[in-house]
Image (cartoon, rainbow, N blue to C red; front, side, top):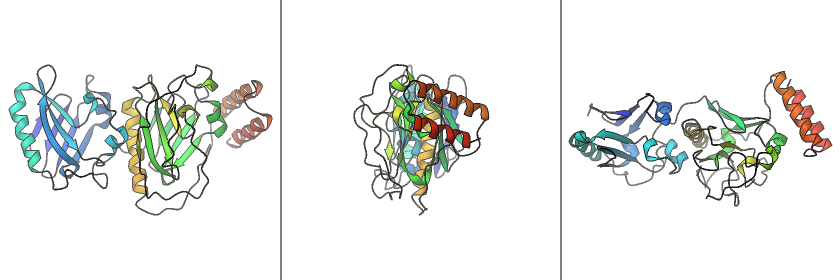
Length: 334
């Protein structure tokens, strides 16, 4: 079609086989849109197109993607607010006739499989490298590995005992994301072999839920949300321990909420990881192990961690053997 339709916070450019969505980066635009910048959506990724009245004299053109076509929406698992839906174009009501024209044009281009789930991702995920600051760790992803570096001010004793974590995408089967706008937001990785292991009551934990960090207690009660690759995943050769029910006790999870790991940072991160995990399943790879504390570290950081470990030891939360072993591990990173 080759036309452009400018709306509030976004502009849609119509091409022969796709729609290029360019998001505004103004101060009033949702931060998720600013983070995404632009997205190219093939017509084959869409299941339907609707036009409906919006708020305050607007209309909303909504291109509905096929299930499984977009890693961002797969990771979001229905938790995005309408105002942050990248497939909704809000326009002034006086452009309703023009919007209806483009809606009809797009509907005519939908393929015969539009009503079926997509068997692969058709929309590109946000690109790595990327990182964000969670409540208890700094999470980073370079395209091949996800790293969690625990903060001594927020991480629980269980996570400190486990040490900093590095997960190759080839060792994962999926990722679970609970919006940080809920009470118990988190991002949790799903190792291969644990696809069907659903944590018990209290899935995830919000800020201040760890008794180990000394800032209060509590547990979430919502259903498990997120995305797994599910059946057919090849299990890792390494043994798997049972998954902790609470995210603040799980070394495969980081806690989000109250300014930590906001939607515009943690959701694109989750989508990028999910896309890489899905891609890694398309080619056989040798099993890899989870590495703790890879690489040389800042001596000041090591000293601070040893000091905090000593406090846990004096408080009786860490045994003599655990203290000696962890201290030796930290010193080895210098």
